[in-house]
Amino acid sequence: MTKEHALDAEFTPTAFIEMTETEPTQTGDELPETIGIEPEGDDDPTDAFAVLGNEVRMAALRALLDAEAEGEETLAFSELFEATSADNTAGFSYHLRQLTDHFVRKTDRGYTLTYAGREIARAIRAGTYTDSVDFDPIAVDDPCPFCGKERMEAHGEDNYVVVECRACERPTLTLPFPPGGHRAHDPEGLLPAFDRHHRHRLSLMADGVCPECSAPANAHVGYHDADEGDEGGEEVAETTENADRHRRPQVRFDCERCGCRLRSPVTLAVLEHPAVISFYHRHGIDIRDRPVWNVGDEWREAVVSEDPWCVRVSTELDGDVLALFVAENLEVVTVRETGQTAS
View: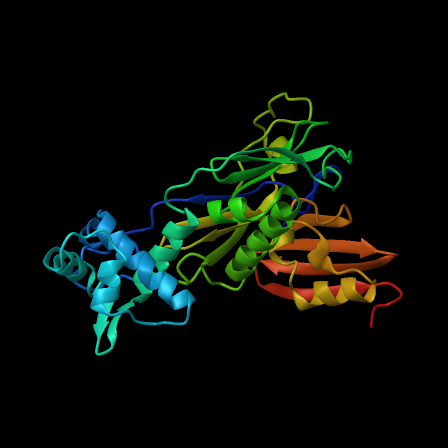
């Protein structure tokens, strides 16, 4: 039997996007993927990362990264030695051997970074492993998706960006942002960069690719949010009628390889569908200009069927309606358009 759920009028599908990282599923001797290291081999990631705990070795990686930035893919032994604080060449030779194979490769022309070495050096340079960035609230030039008032603001907490409304005090989203991005942008440029960063990550996952490790990302549409109280703050009674009324369809992406996980409204996951882009373009709107925390109050979601799963995601502009029917695996199985411009 199918059931149709009408979402509350105040519900905006742009809310409650969140990202968490968890331990990946492991079987037997399977290991989670680490940057540039193949778990299928005999190498233990613990041993690989243990060799990085030395300033001389880190200086060598930084020197090779700087050389690449200047167009030099390799450095000679003597050039690397001069770039570090090593006291003698014998000691430096030992440190360089520890880096070889995992993070540095020796060639006929000298030494060069491996993929893993390049990724590690860039992450350290960007502060990914060492920086914790907070920033004071800055105004967000968009109305709240819940109450409509223009009192939205964003603030940073330990490399996370929190966007919330000071009028109704409802958080819209909380998502991580690399410390390098925090430090590279002024307040005016930070939020646009943050928006593009996560739209790109969401687009990759919607295409079935994990943005962290590029392994397959599995999508599952369903009721993934926790039970929530109503607008007045009272708990919802545990009845089937109330539970169905307040449950909201979402899509959850999971990467079993590295454990990356993203939970999002279905609407956000289909924003870059060709039918959506074309529909908005015909109405003179670039949907990419809408930030993830508020893509517009014209969007609606409704569960058409739970067995099999089907969610209707629709939007209306100038009397024209576009509806996408989304299956459990996030596939858009049907697109319908009605109105004056429908073809």
